[in-house]
Image (cartoon, rainbow, N blue to C red; front, side):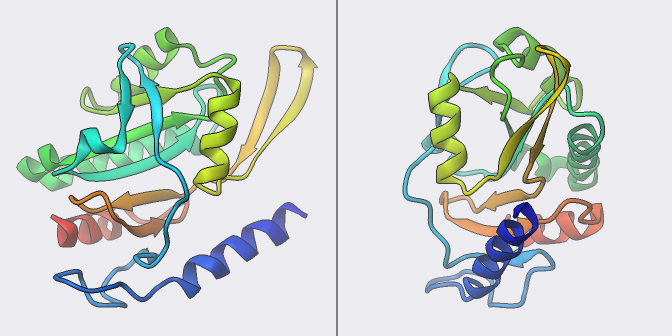
Length: 196
């Protein structure tokens, strides 16, 4: 069932590959999946790891990379965050025009304090975001993020299966590119540079 959902989601993204209007990069110009024609019904409205409420409007003027994960993730999340750290290094001075947002899918364990330790440990400019259970559920639904709690040996010992890709928004706040898990660092750098 999960595999069918992910395949369907990717087909939607592929079907939404033709950008609309203006000075946007032409279709097929990105290495990642061009989803310029996609849209989300709601907006981001979560609290960051310093306690400040954030929306996507706060980041206008920057390219935004939006990633959903959790701090207890054994492999995918720390690997992706490390990759994004390397992307920032490769961008050099231009990295100051990029904002990485890490949205937790596990607000029960990922408190503000936990996010404040985890997220900036990769790059001090990275921002961790969280909501309560209802806000999280609504945000994940809005951004079409799959997630499923997998019980462990105790109540606090569980993992979460979740979508592992990243959304990239241009400086106007428009969705442009989807990076799949394992996207090469150089490919991400190339696409972000086009948006810069």
